[in-house]
Image: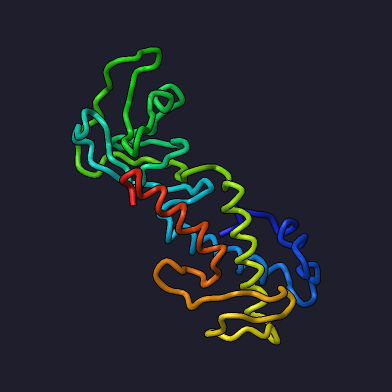
Amino acid sequence: MALTYFTIAEFRSLPDMDSTARYPDAKLTAAGEWIESVIEREVGTSFAARSRTETLNGDDQCDGGLKLATPYVLSVTAVTSNGVVFGVPELAEVSVRDGIAFRRPAGTYVGFTAWDYGFRNIVITYNGGYSATPPSDVKDAALQAARYRVIRTTTGGGLTDRAISTSNEMGTTQLAIAGMNRPTGLPDVDSVICGWRDKLNLFGFG
């Protein structure tokens, strides 16, 4: 997966991250992918568009809507019904509200068009995510955690798995053992991650 919460250039602009010999792009990319996966696992959604494809039953549930696996859908990009691919006009009829995909004839404001009845006959591809770009606090937390990860996994990084305070290129860093409510062990980072997790759980989608 390519980095989506920040760029390599933004990563390189952080203190001590400009050395391509000590910290090659591949190491920075791996650290970025790690923290993105941690954030999305904990929060239950992404802060970037992630393409997903689901195969569903066209059985008229939810008043003509089909329930998707995520409540956060940024756009629907393709639909196939009983083997027939939706063209631009049909695709324009599809909208998603609270994770339910509806068909509404273009130019109307009431009523929905039923999905074709069948078993696993509707294939919907969409971009899922809470937002197309990460909020500033999520981006900053991701950069901080990725920088820690790079230094931690580099020979001579000087961090032990059970340290609660350490000094190195990052300065003096307070740590905690990763666990419940401490997905990374970095208090400032974990505060952001858990804050978003709790906020989105309040919406009933946790």
